[in-house]
Length: 561
Image (cartoon, rainbow, N blue to C red; front, side, top):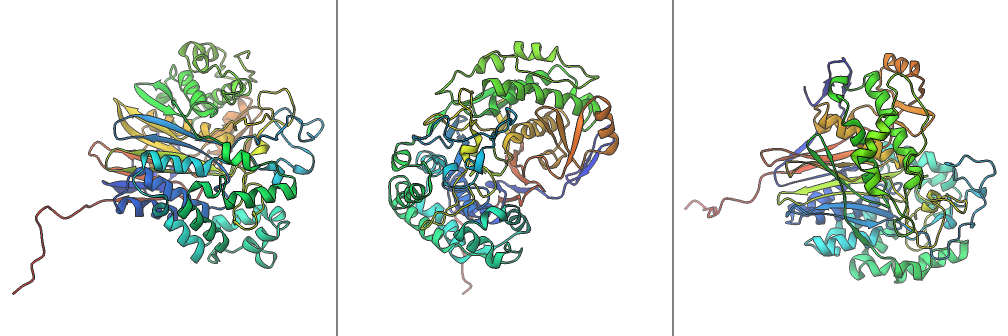
């Protein structure tokens, strides 16, 4: 088995388009090379994985403005050198002025469709939820990092002020959102000069955003949460019907949560708890799969993909009944993640025929996000996902601060009386899945990706690829994926036609997709203490490794006489 292609006993073949980066003193993997380089700059300067992660996050706000920003949300998973884990919840929340009936839902829309009249929950100031990303990053750095906010922000400030080269991926994203971006004067000027999107190879300069970053570097996160940058954001909201207030910005609190821990074939899998749905439902799905001989089924076979599709549908049926902010509802975590409940659900699976599923517990999310993974040579690992929700968030630039805000209000059910209905202060329910996999107490993998509701099913498939199919991490993140939550199964082009026909014969309705979810990246930890970072073809994923080290003690250069 090579790192460039993979074939299992069923003959399924796919080629990896990227190569891993290796290091002994640290690795940074993100969805942009300049962001990964920013994190590596911190590691090379003596910082730890947290310093590197926060530097990478700030850089991503500059070079991936369509995916991530300071007016967004974050779920961060940190493993410290002492082996302890913590989840930092910086997810966006409903503004305090939010009301269950603040939008007008489109009549007759399906229960899972949150469309409203005028797209008010998707585009414009009324779509913006209270942000938590900046506070979460500052909290992580202050509590677990070693460097100052000003130091880790320098690469981001540099790239915003001087500009960077637009990639084909960014150019395509601008084109996709162009009809909305053109309606905002500042967004159009920045991203669509002369009415057409920036082309690959051109430079994107964000001078106003660079000035805002410099103010944060000098004054801290309070510059946005209570200071002059926040005042400009609130002014924009008040003038245009948005709800985020100064009180929202100053009263928001970052929460540290206890992670979910699951057991699968001798592995320990660790991920975020509610309001994230990922830790609960990945554990649930692995519990169901554990009774099957997944290795014998083989990667990419009809049996394997049929089983995965049915398991995904079970998880989404239960997610619809029992996901949400634990401050507003009781999430039956122990029940969902129990082996007993997995046995109940498993008994209903028909390996010969697809079926419809409903929740068994009796009690809309954007796909444009970004993820990064960092590790240092001291045992610290950071796996974190952050987003402004949809592509270019609410699709406008806030005057005076150069930031694109989130459109997270579109992830709440606009109909009152539902589990995910709007309530003041309620946090977003997310599928973000910054996951780590341990074997005999030692970390072996840390990974995650963007992709909205498709995130945790993609992480599940990567974990199965690693544990059951014996793939290397580069192979696992690039392997073809599927996704479903109901009547249609999305399959990537890499799934062979014969397999697709076999799935259709079992009753699955297929939709061929160019991608399922976004660019996964992660780090694999080897027995010899080295590590490998990976990114995949679905984004500008790039990994950087740090090797070598300082000179041997006592060595000095002596000039010849």
